[in-house]
Length: 447
Image (cartoon, rainbow, N blue to C red; front, side, top):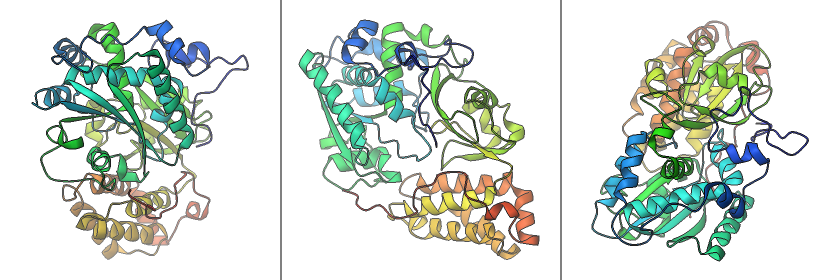
């Protein structure tokens, strides 16, 4: 990705998105000023978080009800109703803990990085409000260790709040190992409890026994920023944008063969083609888009009219996922690109279960053979069989995502598969790759 943030005009202000600012909320301050919001900027625009019971007292039931009425769902990928998570943690006997998941381990995503860079206090307000809602006294902010500048900015934001004595809960920042699966919620909790940042299957879950064996709410950074705005403006305001089933806005990282790649905020239900247009439009004819990130779904160009909602994407076997939209030109070999993505996913597994230790490498290897034109019908049949065995068998959802990617590629690019089987690799397979993929190497450390 050439430029992971919205562009700046020469006068220093954030360039407004095409069509105006009608569907911009989380990034409104950025577009108004073109600079990251300090605590003073944030308080001048939004005021302090409307907390009545931070760090003590009964759970803030009105806030949970407002979040439920707003229809807010998680923006980290799973799309789970936020109010249900809040209630599940608030209903426990022991003092709760809140964890801000700002790891953003999806390589194609930049949305949480950008949000924390330009509006950190909106995210932290949401964390403090969530702590009030579940009766927590501590907030842990989890950031990737390989982004030291991001950690320094967060540390400075926390220091601003401490000096202003703004919060009645402890806010602590941590730098964690940055493997693909280390952003999984149980991996964060396990690391905070002194273990490796690997996902932990089984029960009880985090909501019952998480950090320090206390009920724990783990929430994505963007989700908490939305919560902070709902607390201030109410559920009716939140529902003015988006669809009836999936209200509000969401951040989307648009990358690949577009003129102006970056992070956009758009109302739920915005067509995929409109998002590409807001990123400057395609730079060459498109063959497909990758929706949701490396563990997402390939969609052919004829599906670009589809609205960005779970309901509309479900018939295509797709979902918004981590809010990633990568445009792939017709001139690229989609099978070669997919093989590289699968090789990375296989290398980045926690290697704790059969699907990750054996299944993912086997699927990645078979797909590489297919992409290089050395496969036959027997290998293709084996690849489909192995891919079908991955979902619902792992210690986490990592194998499921890899299976979704591989399966969608075999379906969306069936014509290309046939060509590679009958005639060997296409000419595009020899061209330089179009999607940036980190080295397919195992993580250096989990602790």
